Image (cartoon, rainbow, N blue to C red; front, side):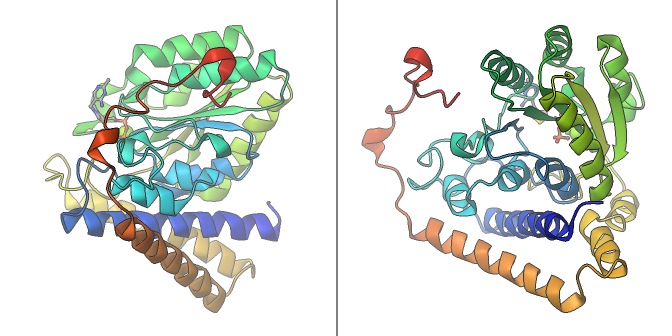
Length: 328
Ligand SMILES: Cc1ncc(C[n+]2csc(CCOP(=O)(O)OP(=O)(O)O)c2C)c(N)n1
Ligand SMILES: [Mg+2]
């Protein structure tokens, strides 16, 4: 059981992610966001539970559904919101949008519009940490759909063969776009695939944030101590459509409602209340501080300028001489 400060930190992170995502949905529906956004609502327990055991210098690699990972790793909601709204104060100066947010200063190596595009980045980061004996760990978040890509299998093999400090976290939210995992994934539990690579595979209830926390803590500690990689699978569900605007013809509303009752935030609130960690007034205080923070992030973003068209072709290539500009 984590200490009180950690419990409150985890709860606050989940609530901040939810507040951020609800605001992004509202802004998208109001026509203020160009491109696509994929919301993390319902999956907050995974990023919050995993990142609670990471240090600032540890690495994470994210996905197209990456806002929750960013916030949990310590990125700034203001700069994220500015990026999503296409403003010059955003993480990529407004040129990347939702699927291209990165913050090397907190070890967040990037969201990725390419499904399965993060595996080899995470393995590279873990290899670098091992070669430098830095004690850092790399966590790779990915979906059930991404676990069918070749990059997943290559990465698992290489991480195992080189005993890399890498934790692969599968967010098994039951769908890859419109395709249910029962149709497209060869196993019921993605964690079973760890057997093929000789590494531990663990499945947890991803909507039970403490179960995620405990399993991740163990995997991260093993990686940090030189014990090699782990495949951790969190069973969860995306409450919203694949992207904002998804007509969701592939699933019944009753299924969504069943999962809504398993909301990871409501479940954690019950637990915190029952264990006497936080009362209703304290939880309300944390929720309203989160909403306030997100409102301020929106004001910051809305008041920021759009990028200058003359800068369209700047920052396209990193300067990588001896690692400079790579953040590694
Ligand atoms: C290589 C590649 N193939 C297809 C797509 C289109 N696409 C975007 S998200 C997605 C589904 C991904 O499912 P999953 O990995 O389970 O993540 P989830 O969206 O459920 O979080 C697909 C097929 C893509 N972006 N990249
Ligand atoms: Mg999925």
